[in-house]
Length: 268
Image (cartoon, rainbow, N blue to C red):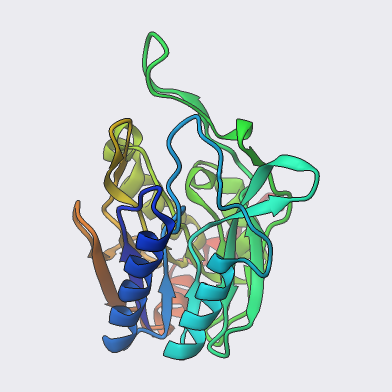
């Protein structure tokens, strides 16, 4: 299968972000991708401390756009993340949606692990995602023609038990739409992604945000496609880009036969 990842530098301009995302999806489709994934917060990158003015439900503009792009380009589309409105709550779910080539929503994953960290001193580089987002609870593996697609988002990457649970549910592919900070990304991004691929013997697809979104917010970039052996098949740089890579499905079974670690587990 040929996959496409769209790396963006999104801002708080919804219309401009949607236009750039659509252009990236169309480019990936033109280059032969059957499955395309967008990064976290692709449609709206909020300023730290601000809420999501574009939070919406199933009939919202962002969801309609994703459905249309999947249908018009006849591909499977992983819609990065969308700020999903919660009735009676000022917070939102940070939600990944998957659409089939007919434009139908086939899976919905709400980010379980929220990014509440303090990376600096004196109050600098403090993130409190839980102030604005509610945590999800459900592990989601989406059926596709190429096998199960495990859904996760950004900070989830630091919790290996989530990915092992996906493997137990039949995941052969894992997607990690992200907006990793530059501080953590430079040391942890590739290491963690390759570890998740090796541990679970899955392809890992990690579309990322990059560059400066606002004076007080920047992302690491370096979107990656990683094979089940942990080898990097394709990597983007530090600017917006469309990454396309061949991912032979048989590679998953080859690796799992060669090192049957998933069958050798002593604790279940």
